Image 1 (cartoon, one colour):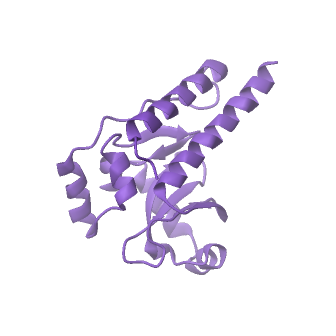
Image 2 (spheres, rainbow, N blue to C red):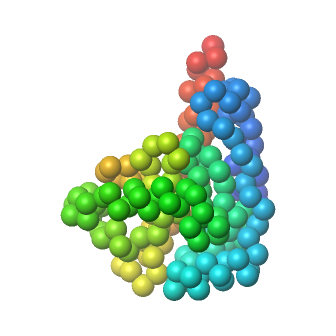
Image 3 (tube, rainbow, N blue to C red):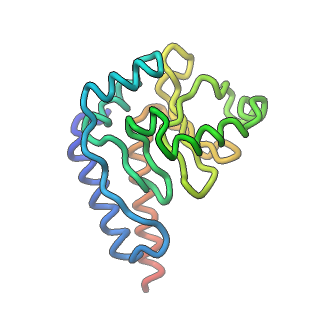
Length: 177
């Protein structure tokens, strides 16, 4: 479990900066994380959704209210996105296009039990967090037509995505040689 979000977010920024140094903005745009969400913003989302956000995701939002291009062209949603701001509209369209039976066969769970928390602006990648009071509470599923990966918690998702970004660094360094 992440106990120091400030440190982990700084690690993510450092990784992003290294990718930018190597990539020069050719593949993906890089952004800093958004300023922390206020308790009022988080509570507004929870009222609108009708349930409390996953505690680990909520903890992240208290330090970074979303992060554009967190991984390649994937935006990690902040409170405004959860309330419907883009790219939530894209994520909802992606979810609506998924055949429930296909999702359930691929993931073993119903798509209705998940909340989109990140999505690509140019690809089919969508990241879904198991809602409270579901048997899948707190897990994160990476779905892009089929399940790509699964993470037992938001913290595990966040740290794994940092690792995926580190792999980008290795690939870019190899290309630079």
